[in-house]
Length: 418
Ligand SMILES: *Cc1c(COP(=O)(O)O)cnc(C)c1O
Image 1 (tube, rainbow, N blue to C red):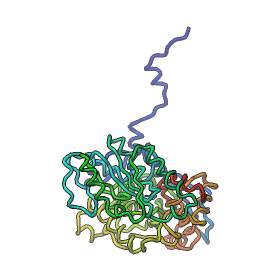
Image 2: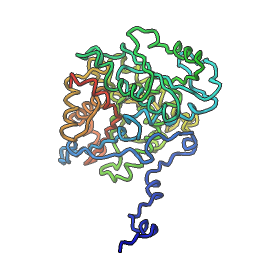
Image 3: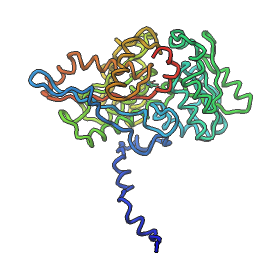
Image 4: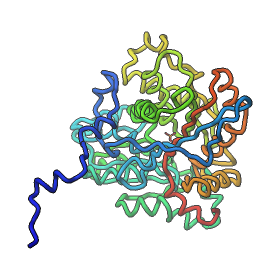
């Protein structure tokens, strides 16, 4: 006769999944002041994975050449919400202010004197290029917080739209479609629309509708708390590299990451500075993807974001900034050779890098950011600097980390060029 197995014996037969143990493995140890900053979890409660990219890696061929071990950190697999990407990580530190009864950083950057909200936000407002990934992440987040979302998409930003053979499709597919599915109010701004420079009229309109709008700048980088998420990610990466038992130096010697609005890179720089001994040889390379502004513009911004994050996570102001943890211009390394002809324009070489990644590793990149990062990284691997780095430090192996920041949903709008 069939006998029900008592519950207790079923559970005792289950593999011993030590929840606590797993949690512990995925814990980031943050230093005091940083650990105390409020954070609202959006990402999974485990780390975004880091895995090897075997086809792109090259074995050691001593004495001439060091082996190059390439890994990817999958920020595109970091969160359960739609189109996971790097913006969710930044938003984790912004949500507490959004939900606060007295938000502090809700205003538009041109209007820092905007009056108080008199209560928690009711609607998130943000902006981006037509195929912005950031706006999608804000829209998806809004509903999980019980808030509305209004998204401003500018036709004039970058060149992706102009380069498209089917402009109607470009403004209705990919991330635009997803924004709509997520229930955001989408407003497409014509080129030269004054609102693309100053969204305050939209915020005023919402205020007269009895809403309490919370403005999140494009990419969340100009937000006062925008750099914290990636400062935390630096500690996550340090924990992961210890668990991975990397060869050579035991750490990721080179990290390649996209630099768009700049706080992903700025936050990483601040986090690594705080977490590491005075002299670190780790190279963090920010890959630019737009020729619109010169490199010096991005350098200054990234430095500002890194220092702003640094102050918040526990560098005690000026003294510390002058010490061994000081963040200096040399810490901001930007690669600007692969910006191509415009933001959001997919050039032949970037497309090729995307094809290499897809065909050799089965990984899909995005046409705006990570495609250009992969192209840059492949070029660096071919050039001398990484080998020179290995020779100077007598390493037979160099470890390289490629950060996949997401963005694949834009591909739908690039169907005519890919
Ligand atoms: C926004 C974005 C970036 C750039 O990050 P910033 O912090 O703006 O520099 C890189 N990759 C993807 C896919 C993005 O959506």
